[in-house]
Every structure is written in structure tokens, then in C-alpha cells.
Image (cartoon, rainbow, N blue to C red):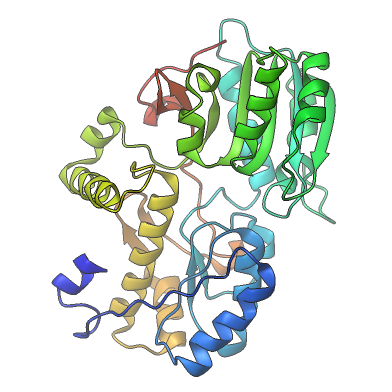
Length: 353
């Protein structure tokens, strides 16, 4: 916002940013977006965090005809409003893309995993990766694992908000898989790893879907070689390839985050998604030359958006505006997250157990 305003704002006006806290309660989302639009009378909106919340916000945006860029809803078939625009895409079938990319990477190891255990948060933000999409006969992580030759030892589900990991830790230890795929959120994987540590057990390799990145680094040796998804990591080889503008953004973000005393200061996936969502919004407004919502929506469908971290994005309503994914796999190596797959965007080689 500061950069935007330093360069004249939008349509010659300075941008003011109003933020309401939904307290991670889906019941608050619709009320807050109604308030933003009808009481605050904002000109533009930005989507909230997490798929279920974004779906709630999307209903309000559609009712009022507002354009809504959003940065964390990746379940493309549910994002049916033609004026929502994703800044993080795992393509039209994320339940296929994620496991296929992950298993492809694992297959390159000298001793690829032969057995797998799934541990899954049963919320709408994660369960679709393990079990596929409701009422759609698409593959899922389990069936794709079996097709890849992995023996599925267990499929362990847990409710959102779970904070007792001892029983699941004991179950995983007893099964002793080569690989644990934990389709989880936030610090859940930290809780499971710590519970397994208390049992004197550590799986050879482990993956978390959407973890908080900092706490996993804080595990030290217990977090080494951990895997997750990523759209961007501030690794020097990647920054060198992408150029001076990316370096400037990464360094400024880290400095501001440190000054704000945030515990994790790296500009990575979440920051990239948020940054890109703003670029989409700015591109739509500038192309439309107006704050008319339909004109902004039409402009994005017609011209797309040029973005810093993903290049030129094109939005096809037939694909619910989701674009071909450039997401990769990252791994904790020597105490830091490093992009390791696919090879054309990697900053280091994937490490085995």
C-alpha cells in the first residue's frame, strides 16, 4: 500500500486500507463483508484467509457484484463466482496436482519411500487433497499413491482444532511408514512431531500441506528434511534468477517484519499470494480506468494481470479463473526452507532421509 501510494495511488487517489478481524470464525465473515460494503462503503475488497472463509466472503461479493481477489482458496471447482480472482493456483484439480508433484519428486530419491501414512485435518481447506472433491470422481492423494506403487498403511483423520496428538503419534510410530503425508494447517504438524519425539520416534520423511513455516524451523533437528508446498522461497539462487525488484521486495519485507518484531520474517508463500492479489486488483482497476466493479472484472478477463512473482496471469471463467500452477515443493535443509522441486525452479537438490 505504501509503494502504491508513493506512486500516485489508484486513479489518482490515495489508498486507505480497512481491516476487520474475523477471529478465524467463519460465522463472522459474511457479517464483516456486508459491513465493509454497505456501511463502510468501500470501493474495493480483498478476500480473507482460508478456503471456507473465502467461500463465505465470495457469496457476499457476488451478491453485491464486487470483484474479489483472494490468495488462499485453491479448491478451484468451488470458486464459481466469475469475479473472484485467485493469486495462488494449484490448477483446476488441486487434489491431483499436489500428490502427483510430490510423489514425482520422491521417486527421484536413491531410495524412494515404499510405504505411506496419511494424517489429515478434516476441514474443507485440507481434506480434499487426501480424499478428493465431494461428488466428483477425481483421483485423490490416496489413490494416486497406490498408483505410484506406495503401500498405504493408514488414513488417519482428525477434527479441526485438535490439540492432542499422542494417540496419532503412537499410531504412526507403530505403523513405522517410510513417509508421512500430513495434510494439515498451521502448527498442527509441529504438535504431531513433538508428540512423536516424546515417544522417541521420527519418521524418515514427512510432508505438511499448509503449515506455519516458522514453527517448523524452530524444531531444529526434528524438523530437518521436512517437506511442504511453496510458490516462492527467498533463496539466493531464486532471487538471482528473478532480479532486482524481487530482491528489493524481499529485503524490505524482512526489514519491516523485523522492525514489527514478527517471529518469522521471510517473504514466502503467504506473502507472495497476498502481494499477487494486490497486483491483480491494481491491474484490474488501472485497465478499467474506473471503480466500476463489472468493468474491473471484465478488464481482468480480457487483459489478465502482470505480476512480479508469477509473470502474466490469464483468467478464464471456464476454469473459475484458476491458472496453470507454478507451485513447487520446499524442504527444510540446514535450518532453512529451500525450494527443491521441480528442478527448473529449485535452489537445491531434494534430500532423502
